Length: 87
Image (cartoon, rainbow, N blue to C red):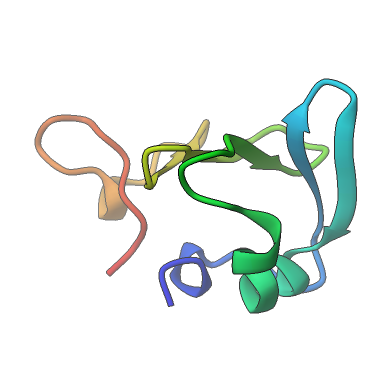
């Protein structure tokens, strides 16, 4: 549900990047539906973005996920200035 609440259109083409030479292009819908098949906590770091580079997701190998955007969105910014997905 967390990925779904990021409000990225399901048909958006995205890039999944593990290493500079390990990249897959797919749709946002495929990532939301099968994210556990794309990301393995403990061993993987995964960066997800689209061609606009206006937002990115970082799945960190210590089981943390970060979402950031270039667009100012006061509805997802907490008091520390750290961006969080919409509730």
